Image (cartoon, rainbow, N blue to C red; front, top):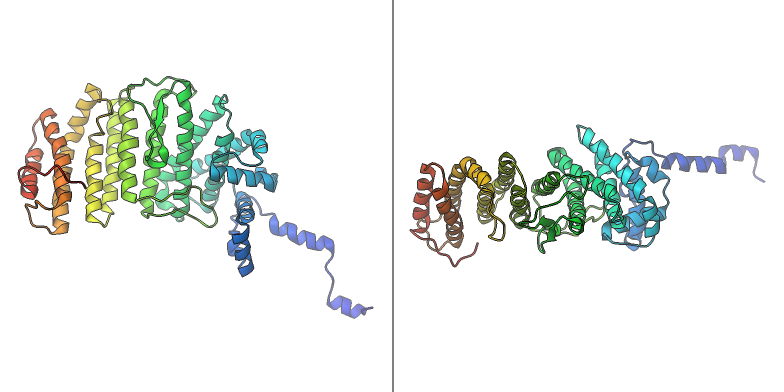
Length: 441
């Protein structure tokens, strides 16, 4: 038997002490920001395990982050199987194994998500805790959307409001957020979730259609359709939710300014997305946002509201052009910005009401003319081409599309302006009397 002195020198830890150490290590006080597990453990074997069984470590990461959120008490009580079901349902956006348990707890899950988002909205300064709240709430909301009962209109409307407030709040604070990659992925996932909820309203008096190829297939209201009040959310608020949410997610993407798959090791891939920055900005404004605005204009909107939306879309695209290094893409963005200012969409969209169109032309007509000649002059200056340039297809196409709009605009302006003459002068200097029509940008 070992001597007493040896036992004193090498005491054997009791079971109780070992268990206590484990509990202290795992019980993170609410509000304390934990570091990701992959930062705490630097081990080659751990990386190998993550490749073999990534889901196990997604659950561990999620649980770890959830302990620092406003809903920490809820998640501490949940089993690993429930957390795995939430994550898989959120990422796949479809039913997965264990969905019955999720259906039983979806009301509690929605309440916890609301608690997380409420803290984000109320806090003035962005922090890692708020980012953790956003991450956990996003997975919870997406999972709850899949199991939502179609007859549960109260929960449905509540989720629409939560998703809207989440997107707008993050968009307003995006300049203060450090981990933008992660937040962009989360906002796109929230936007996708909101679109899915709005599309389900079509069966209850609200007519929406999903446009293939539009950003995240976000639905748009159909033209000439008088939207009915079928929920606790008033009709005009639904329009504002669709417009503001689209502008919010585009503002977040603009701050990201990077193309490719958005992925974060800790947060996982919420949305498998590969996009071109310029195409997403222009196409989403033109085919989603402006369609919402024009249909809203025909459903009782005020002139000042519509003009405000037009200016907001224009400002976003113009700022994006200013940060674009490629001169061709910058002109493409500026052209889209000018068309957005005038709410010009394809011919399939209804005309604006006369009063709104008159107000829009009065307030935005002359600025659009000024932006047009400045765009063309900036392009020529940066490309250093000789003018008139009959071979530059980009300049030809710009003047053909914008010139046609501005020619019609000049005839409708309440008072004639020198800005149109100035634009026409630049057009003749750049591409001659008539730009070619059979070119593409």
